Image (cartoon, rainbow, N blue to C red):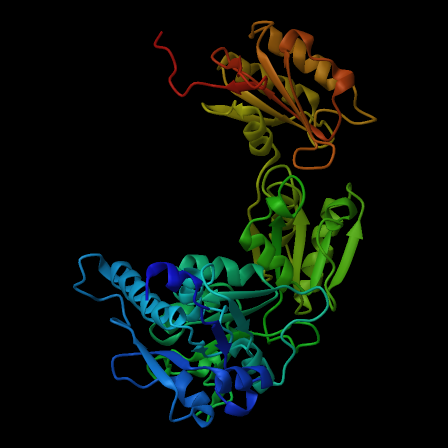
Length: 503
């Protein structure tokens, strides 16, 4: 047959057939139909030749089926292939796709069997990416091992607004820890040799007590247990770690504690994974109403909002809850240790009757760093952070510190610059700073950084207008070395060189 005749010949159809998690009775009707109609049945296996996919579909195979065994060259990353593990696998996938393409070019229908779902961590997808653009293709979905594991545990996987995260156990341990800490529910695949690292990640993220282990779900050798009780040496590849829904779940026994959590300057994009995890794990949330409103509501979680000027009372309230065995998160904008709630909580916890209450502080992105990043790098050299609020310290102290920092030629980040009842401090601070700084010193005004009303402006120190500053604004005052430049796209960038000139 000529090449032209081959091009006109009808091509075969490619199927990716999801077989479900292992029990043949969980195959879909469509999967059974496709296998029955196929000329060629292909499946992956290790070098020993046994294939779990084939064993699931075995009752539906005919003697006249052409069977294509796609045998992996390696099953671990140890190989003498010149391209390493990836090189060996790429070569294998290319060869396997070529073998299937030969059948498709001959007009044969090819069914590639896949445990679970073909496009969910399945080997079939490597064939799909190489062949689907050249041949008519259909993917038959299958029940995933995650769904099977949840069904065997008899526990809701996710409910309401909860988020499910599916993770491969092959991720670096630190990455696993961060993702497990931040999510509501999770399934960790590809255990086996990765199990010890996965277990450590669950423990480090504070989720080990919730975790369940399911092995070979729906198969004859099925097993499930609390993950903390599983012997790592007994864990096969076909197993799943599950963090089920927290809604309605019995909370694990724990000692009461207070965690002071930094929310960053604005919404969820500024939360660290650690902060997100602590907020999710808390039984009670305590904080200023505006900041508490940033935290999504969770079923079963109690929220205790209060005014912004009752820090000491709020701290004692949180510590009292913890004394009664509650797990409490005190929320704070920015970083809780920078003019925020960590000091108030620790101050109260240093006295009776709260000395025995565990207190932890979880950092957050500061307003100064957020505004600096938006403007460029004005904090690129030594800088000082000063609050202009005289509610808790005399103005004379503030003025003395402003003079000292200005005389030392430090960049300044000025917090709490003004409010409805305090409108004169910015003007007075400008006067003090002009005693040591040139009138054209760059000043960054960052308002509502990260929020819907964000605005970043750069003005000269001499032109700083107090009426344009409120409590949602932070000021970054440059040093004698701070520079500004206007880039070709029109944006103005501010930075302070890291090298300071020799005297």
